[in-house]
Length: 436
Image 1 (cartoon, rainbow, N blue to C red):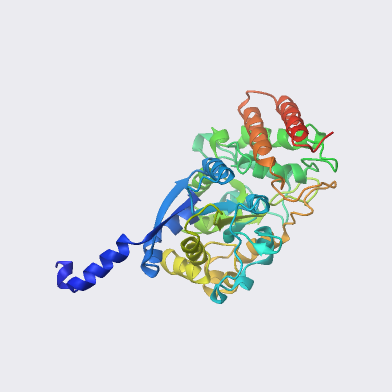
Image 2: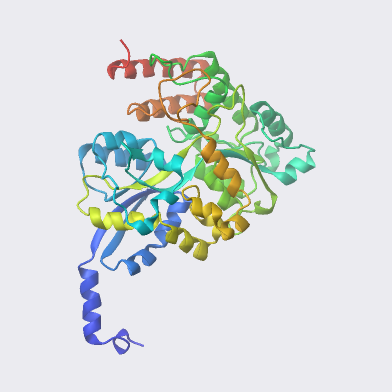
C-alpha cells in the first residue's frame, strides 16, 4: 500500500516540511556497548522530537578523546554533544568550554542522580554534563573453574591470591587464560587499571610538592607484578586489549578472571551476549598493601560544548538520553541487565533491575565507596582515583601508558620504562610551572 493512501496529501506535505526543517545535531560518543544501544534508539528520540535529527560520530576511546580535546580547545564546533568523563568535565568547565546545565526541567529529577556522580560532573556547584552511565571497578571470575580447582573466593581478594589462582587456571592450549587485564596504552585504558594497582601497592603519581613518583619502589613493584602476571597467565597480544577486547574475551569463556569496569556486569550476565552468564562470579577489585584507591570511579557523561550552535536541541537530547524514561525504554527493549548503570537511585530501587541484576547492590556500593579525594596511602595533592585531575595528565598518562605497554611487550624493561616515564613527567611538570 502506498503511503498516500494512508495519509492525506496535505499531511504528507507537513511531514516532509518537518523533516526538511529538522535541526541536525552531531553527537560524538565512544564505541562501548551502552552507547551503541543509545545510537540504536535514534528513531525513538527522533519520533518524540520531530524537529531534531541525530548525526552520530562513534569512535574508539583513545581516538574519541583526541578528537574531542582538539575540537573543544580550538573552538572548532564540530560537535553539539560530546561524550566525556569525570576527568574532563571540571577542567573544561573552568575554561568555559562547556555549557552549564542549570535549570533542568523538573521531570528530569536531578536529585535522583547519585550524589558522588553529580559531584564529579559539577563545577562551582553546577552540573556541566549529565551522566549516561557510571562505574567503579571489580573482579569477574568463572565460578565453575574456581569450583573445579577447589578455590574459594574470599570477601576481599588480594593481588597475590589472584596470581596464585591464575597459575592454577591458566591453560593456553585450550585458550583458557588465567587472567585478562587491560594492556592497550592510554591514560583511560591501561593506566586506569595500572593506577589503581599502584595506589593499592602504596604508590602515587605525585608527592605533595608535585614531584613525580613514577620511579618509586611502589611503582616498580606494582608495574612489575602487572607485567609478569599478564605475560605468565594472560592472553597473547595483551598489549592490544582494552575494555572492549577483554569484554569479548571473557564473554566467550577465554578468561578465568578479569578486573575491569563494573559497567561490564550487565553484558556478562546477559545470556544473549555472554557464554558464561550462568557461571559468573564477582568480587571487589583486588588489593595489595592498602585498599585505598584499589577501585576507580568514572562516569561517561553527555556535555554540550560552548561552541555548539544548537544548544537547545542538544539539551533536549542529553536530558532524554540520561532520563529515567530512557532507562525504562532500554529495559523494555533490551532487557534490564542492559540499562545504563550507576547514575540514578531509582534504577537500584527498581524491582525489575533488582531481579535481573544480582550485582546491582554490589556495584552501587563500589561506586559509592570510591573516594577520589583520598585514593593514596601517602598524601597526594590531586583528586582522582585512576587519574590525576590536572590538564597535563592526559598527555602524561598517555605517555606513561605507552612506556608500560612497551615493558609488557618486552621492548624495554619495567625499570627502564619507569625511569623514562619519570624523566618525561618531570619535564612536563616543569614546563607547566608545577616544579621550581
